[in-house]
Image 1 (tube, rainbow, N blue to C red):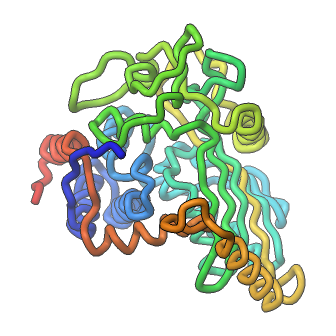
Image 2 (image 1 turned 135 degrees about the vertical axis):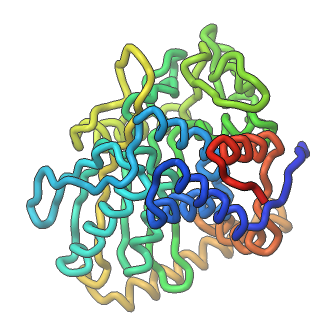
Length: 361
């Protein structure tokens, strides 16, 4: 297994620094706390692609006006059991959490709610919104796209046609929830970002060049870039591949159609220039309590998940896991031992802080 250098940063110190950065960038303390908590939470869950490595990029978007601090969702259509919301290009960690709260509240009361959110700033790790629902006993399903971010080639193609188009499902089993959360691309764009900063190398077939050859080199996506500094996905000539061949490519298209087109935010393309991007998200919230005997659902669900985990593993040292198991283990480890950041990622965060006049511990 390849090894790469990391610097362990205490979780509390890292969250405090990120919060102060966003306060200096113009966010109110409450919103800065939400963004910092979300980004750190992604790192704690092992989703470094959606964690604090994105701080400099978020600050750049705030400075350019691509995302806006202090926004609240605007209701476009409200049918009770469904609602369409506009995020008004607010920070995704604020407007997506607000949208989720609306859907969860209505599902708790009425059994189900469908929420469409458009024009949200980068909403980050989708699993957080599923966890938000799980805390209230609500099952949720999320289809997400990124308008203005064309990164992924469809199965059989070399040209970009999809965003990384995440898909997520959270199932509330008490004490042992199931959380499935993944990009429909072979790797998330954030993993390419992390690799370009000296982090975990990409699989050799994660990217595709214009001639159809496979690549694990971040330059395929970004083109030339400095060791520390911004990355521009418009700079490369290649694309990220869809995961799972035709299956992942098909699911990516569905995420674009439901998360982007149906919500009114638009699919990822075609576009003529990059700049502002925006997430669209179609979320379905369901209350097991309203579907029958909740206790039976919990008991049967736990029994089934435990039976899956009990399958004989290929390697006795690597037991079969349910979705969300590895994230839970990583969270405990990183809270105890610090969040491992690549030196270039940490240097980028420090430079961002210093440029805003924020003291770095």
